Image 1 (tube, rainbow, N blue to C red):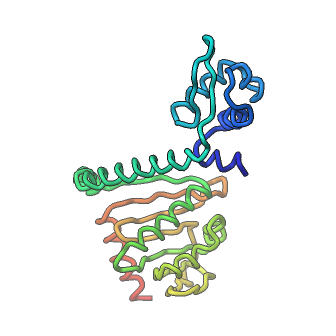
Image 2 (tube, helix red, strand yellow; image 1 turned 180 degrees about the vertical axis):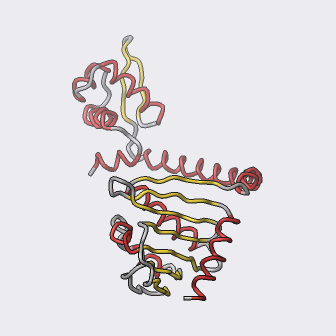
Image 3 (tube, rainbow, N blue to C red; image 1 turned 135 degrees about the vertical axis):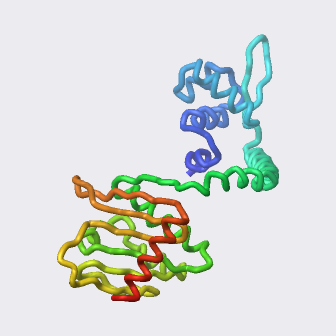
Length: 246
């Protein structure tokens, strides 16, 4: 428990060993601390210098030898408080420059932007982006083209996607190509059952983005997100036309 807490504080394994050795020994020379921590003297000295810089350890000289001594462990709380103060100050400073940074970003955000994803873990990020983007949207509804042949692959690494979507009050309209698929909540679905062929593809149109997920030759999903208002607007027009005529 002590080691895990000190890791969260920011100390590495060898640094923890040296620090705990020093707490047990009290004021000691480098050699004695190195023996107790089972670390070579050179590494031990570098670690001690870091602990001194952090404020956990101090030293004094006696008969031409350096003796290192631990500070009161309660100082850890003081160090954390100092870090929090610095973070708060940095946060305040960054808030002031965000508008300037956003002015730069707005210039590139007007251009089409494409991101590529490969494999289950990466394409899961597409589904996460849908939830994140739509939870911030005023109109919490997006549109999907879903092919029968891709459904078994789609949610393997995000099986509670629909539950998360419903929890965030996000609606979806789905045009299902082929049989299968069912309503889960806050969704509408229409089927194109008279289509004789089906491509393993899943298209999501949400806000100013259009995502395409398909199955590669190794039976793993690959996908892209096209971030472009004009593209998503056109996709919505096509979707609504098909939806209204099914």
